[in-house]
Image (cartoon, rainbow, N blue to C red; front, side, top):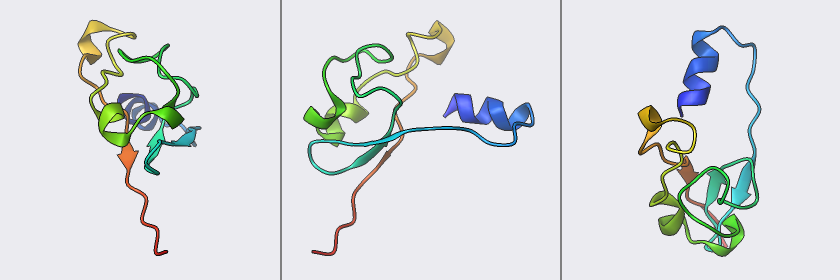
Length: 80
């Protein structure tokens, strides 16, 4: 994630992030409950599948040089 990489480069002591669950139980790293503001998609993270989230461009809104940046995703590993 470019923002975290830049924080490390600048010597930040820590970074803050938010984790949210997708409709199918995957955990994704995104601040907003909705994807509208910072991606090419629309809707609530909780109403999208992880595959739908992975298809979104999360960089173009900030700068054309970040086109194609993806939201970091981790699949849930439930044992039940």
